[in-house]
Amino acid sequence: MIYLQQNNHAKRNRKRIIAGIFAFLVAIVILIQIFFSHFFPALITSVARPFWRAEFSVASGSLESPQSLLAENESLKLQLEEANIRLQAIGAIELENLELKSFFGKNISATSTIKNKRILAPVLMRPGAGPYDELIIDGGKNLGFTIGNKAYAPGDVLIGAISDVLPETSKVSLFSSSGNILNVLIGPSNAPATAVGRGGGQYTAQLPRAVKISAGDFVIVPSIDDKPFGIVSAVESDSAQSFEIILFAPPVNIYQLRWVLVEHI
Amino acid sequence: MKLRIITDLIIFIAIIHGWWFVALPIAAAGCWFFPYYIEIIIGGFVYDALFGMIPGTGFTAYLGIIISIIIFAGIATIKQNIRR
Image (cartoon, rainbow over all chains, first blue to last red; front, side, top):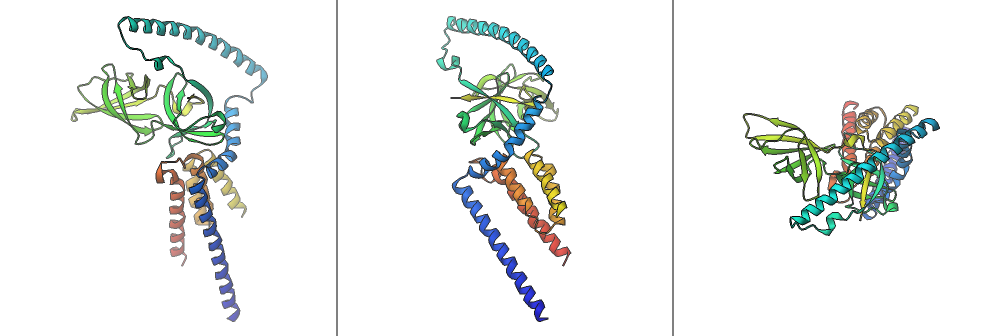
């Protein structure tokens, strides 16, 4: 019996010591997180980054044979040439548009014609079905990114802004984050509405049924960008309700994004 | 011990990929089958460090840790009551 009591006592002491060490470690972690909020995200991301980069490389076809890469290179060169020709045509139309506007006395601000420098960054992680609606991109302080830099999907589609910058990666919070509210103009009549983010690039807005909106109409957010921000994907109408629900999403699929352009001011 | 390490590896891979829906049930099962399964809290912390912890977003930046602590404490309590 005496031996048993001694054992129990030693066991209890050991448990207390373990609990004490655990509490001490937790306290240290909390203190570090309070005073150096980027320490753990940077440390853990630096461990995960090689895995993400390897996955990105595999998805990008880095492991394909040289012949197929050369063929793809040729095809991309052709596409680039075609895109350049189209870009020149668009440039000419833009110039014509500016000239016409000046004819009609429209005041064209200098900023609208200035193209900010944009840096191409690979998307390492896309939003899953998780609570954080964000992209993780390969580029951070090393590329000079700062919080608030806007991120564009290919095709000049604004999708979000940088919310956190780590040494080699950044987090891009999507405008479609759940609960995020935006003032938008929908359809050819530019009907003003309040859009609410639903996550994963999806938005919802309400409009009176009298406003004629159909799938495929453009959505713009004048406070952010004057280019098409989204395209109406569906209109849910109920004859018993005076409002209809507009569902829209960006013209690009957020889940298939491989690259983004980050505006570098 | 071997099974615990395999479970930890699966959880680690799932967390790196942001597959919380894979990591969470496995970690919850780990809590039930293994003693002092603090890996669930570490997993929650790693998930938040990778995808959350955005300054200025309040407690929502720590959802992983909060949920993992709730599951850890909940399962520990249930285990204690059932096995008493």
